Structure formats: structure tokens, C-alpha cells
Length: 338
Ligand code: NAD
Ligand code: UDP
Ligand code: UDP
Image (tube, rainbow, N blue to C red; front, side, top):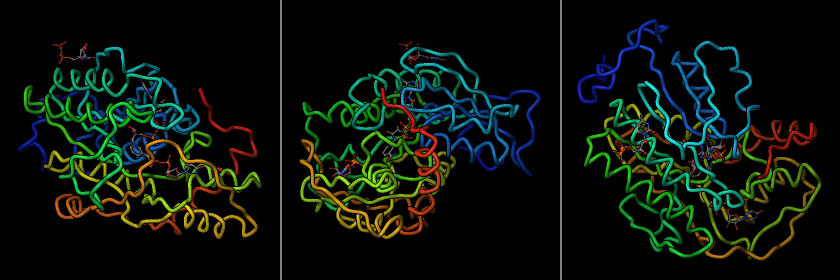
């Protein structure tokens, strides 16, 4: 058992009656908060397929049962409707904490980043298990360093419209490190850069989802501002591989997990047009306040210490989400707003 030496999380908790998870490894019972969401549901698929037991905690604020319905009836899968802002008692081996109202239209409504993270850290402390926080590139704010390394402290407006998310995640990172130093909880921190793929919310304002849905609906793609701001887009399976590598590795982080390929919004619109419909058009709209001008991860740390790097380029990844979006739009099953 390669991980028992330094972590102890295999040895501290043992549960009877587990299904073996492949040769040489005990199956784990893993909590995924936010597991009914976009990233969470892909992570759950990976954990289940390698033989682990998964308990999803989700209040369906932005997540959907449809993202997990293929697992209903699997004896290694459980789904609990619960708001992580409230305490919960569970006996588990690992905690992936993803629950968060993650998109611009949702994130101002909820104290999940602070109270939810505190409760999950309390749970990790009580049962003595490893805790992984999904933080965000937004902790770098409108960065004055480019590309962003993990050592950069960020340029965040504490009182702006996005602050609830940016500062919420910064606080979540602080809490995570405090529990690590003060209560000896084993923690891992991922700073996730813009990610896309099937099951993304359709109407939550994220740019890739917006453009793809708009082109399928034969509407113009809404480019905010002059469209020259940049982002780096990571396909969801690359992110999930990175999260698992981080959880199982021996380094706390924080680690940037993102695809360093950098695109302006105008370039992204062009790729979406080439991928889905060559007659697609764009329209310019005013940009939101405090929109970061550029963003691109420096992923040397994750490459070196986690042996991880993304494999799927934007041109390869975009076609992989089009069918899912088309089906949901045609079926009127568009996910929900508030
Ligand atoms: P998502 O909205 O699809 O998933 C978040 C999930 O958390 C949803 O299922 C939602 O219902 C659930 N949730 C929200 N508040 C909750 C609460 N109080 N109690 C229980 N469940 C709650 O978003 P996502 O894109 O899958 O993001 C997952 C994580 O990754 C988030 O922590 C997000 O901040 C982080 N992240 C994502 C991206 C990205 O590009 N997708 C980028 C940076 C960071
Ligand atoms: N908590 C939880 N489940 C647990 C253990 C703790 O939800 O299994 C919550 C607990 O209710 C508290 C938070 O996590 O609100 C922090 O717990 P901790 O024990 O660190 O703090 P304390 O309760 O001592 O203030
Ligand atoms: N954006 C855009 N059109 C849209 C939605 C977003 O041009 O329909 C821009 C937005 O102004 C920002 C970039 O796309 O500069 C990425 O926005 P998103 O909300 O997806 O991610 P984040 O700002 O959190 O990186």
C-alpha cells in the first residue's frame, strides 16, 4: 500500500465489506461535495469506474440529478441532498470539496465558500482524512503577473461584484491552510483555471457555454468588451486527472490546474464558429466590472511534482461537448437558473 506511509488515511479508517478496487489497492469511501455539478459529476464517474465508493453531497443549487442519473442503482454510489453550510456527520476516507455556486450569475448568493469549507474541514479533522479544496484562478484577481505562478499573491478587489467568489475562495484557502497547520489535517489545494466540457451549465454566463449554446440556437455569440481579453481553456477530463493526481500525491499545493493555451475571446468565437457552424456571427456587449484582462496558468509546478499536464487542446475538446449541448437544447433540458 504505497500511500499508507506518510498519509495514514488508509490505516486510520477501515470499513468492513468493501469491494476490492483493483489489484493491490483497497477501495475507498470518498465524499464529493458539489458532485452533481459539472466538474464534480465527471470526477465521480472516474472514482466509481476505478472501483471506489462515492458519496455525493449536493443541494442542487446549480447541479443536476441528470448529471448522475446513470449511477442511480449502483451500490457504490450515494447521493445526499444537503447544503454544506450545515454540519454533517459521515465516516469516509477522502473528501473532495467542490461545492460552490461557481458561476457569475450564482456565486453572489451564498456563503458556501466560507461556511461550507469550514464544515468539510471540521469533518476531515474529526475522521482524520485528506481534504482537497477546489480553489480558482480568480484568487489571482486581475493579475499583474503573467502567466500566473502559484507564488503570486493576486490583485483582487475586496469590495467589487466578483469579490464574494474571489475573496470567498481566498478565505477557503486560508481556512484550509489553518486546519493543516493548526489541526494537522492533510490538505490539498487546486487552483482551477477556466474549464469546459459536457454537462457544463448552459446558461450560467461562462463564455464557452454561452458561445456554444448561442451558435446551436442560431443566435450571435455575445463578445463582452473588445474581445481582446484572454483566457486559457481546459477540457474537463484533464482537470479530473489533475485533481486525482493531486489528491493522491504528496504535495499540499496550491497547484495551478489549467491548460496554458491562451485565446482572446474573439479567437474563441472563431474556434466555436469553425467547430459548429461556419455561418455563426458575433455581437459586442459591454463588459462586466473588474473583468481580468488576461489569464494563463504557469503549470510548471504541477508538471514537475504531480507529473500532470493537460492533453486535450481547445480544438480537440470543443467538439466533445457539442452533442451534449445540442441534446439538452433540443430536449429543453437546459439546466436551471436560480
Ligand atoms: P457547478 O456549479 O457545476 O458545480 C458546483 C456544485 O456545487 C453544484 O452541483 C451545486 O449544486 C453544488 N453546490 C453549490 N452550493 C452548495 C452548497 N451550499 N451545498 C451543497 N452543494 C452546493 O460548478 P463547477 O464548474 O463544476 O465547479 C466545481 C468547483 O470547481 C467549484 O468549487 C468551482 O469554484 C471550481 N472551479 C471551477 C472552474 C470551472 O471553470 N468550471 C474554474 C475554477 C474553479
Ligand atoms: N463539522 C461537521 N462534521 C463533522 C465535524 C465537524 O460538519 O464531522 C462541522 C462543525 O459543526 C463545525 C465545523 O465543522 O461547524 C468546524 O468543526 P471544528 O471541529 O473544526 O470546529 P469546532 O466545532 O471545534 O468549532
Ligand atoms: N465573456 C464574453 N461573452 C460571454 C461571456 C463571457 O465575452 O457571453 C467574456 C468575459 O467578459 C470574460 C471571459 O469571457 O472576459 C471569460 O468569462 P467567464 O465568465 O467564462 O470566466 P471568468 O471571467 O471567470 O474567467
